[in-house]
Figure 1 (cartoon, rainbow, N blue to C red):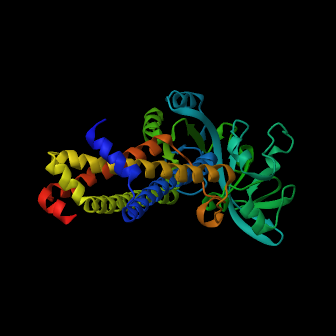
Figure 2: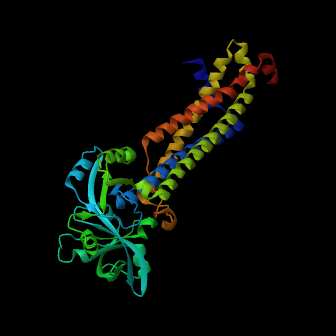
Figure 3: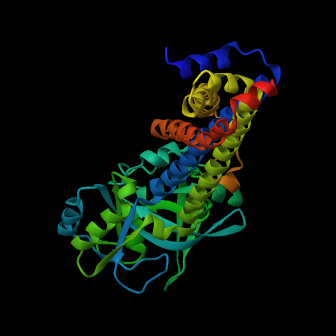
Length: 406
């Protein structure tokens, strides 16, 4: 066995010095807590970003294509639905689906209460998968029931609570235009996305209703909603779609439509970096303290080794091997702590949140194994590299003074 490795194993597993053992245990606990917190921090941040991002894009898609004009209101200008334009958009590699839609502001009156909302009109092509998951009661709009599909509406739980409504109730919706128009609509479903910007603003109805209210021709729509395969390629996909669009149309990404939400998500990345730096610093400081104490406690042993001909680097390796054993143990315990709590939360939703503040009712978790591996390797390498400096204390110890120190 290698001399340095043999001596370090004896120090690690056979030492009976109680003071250094206490310091070593504190160092191991520091690494365990540091790594555990780092794993949980990354998992929570990535979970938050994924959940909130999926909520927003699940309702509004990834890219919206509208008419090129100066209209910045909720009621977009109409243009003619074109099979050629749809074909060109679908030809972009990342495009997964495309749906026509339109929006129109209105006022809901029910139970002596009023609420300003925006009616989002969709048709039978619309993908209801996400909204079905967000349903609190009722069902989605039934486009097979052609007799009264235009009278069906879905509202958010927030709007339902404010207006004291439930699935199956009727309501009156007024549309401010010339002349003023009203419609009696039936609530078929209540959804709860948990995103205040969406829940407070939108209700969902039939695209044909908006067409009739606006006196549009059968082929006119308010825009296209595009969903893509990989959200990380959103900007490049939007640029590719722009290249395919005629001059009369333009595109907006979901990030441009909801800048506040995505800016908040980006700020979470800064918090993650700060947390990783602080936790790594705590682990490094603990290991430096432990290594210095172990070196000072074994000053006599170092002097004897030097008197027997051992070089400084050989003795340094003894303590670096010892530190590596301790760091490895701390990493093992840190993984057990971080991954254990992470999977516990992922499957039980034990830790709850205030949805009004955090857009969801529980702490979301997304464990990425590549992140876990990088955290382990990063912590190990940084700790060992930093520990080379305090281990150089060995070079300042002379055999005569060390043996006399004993």
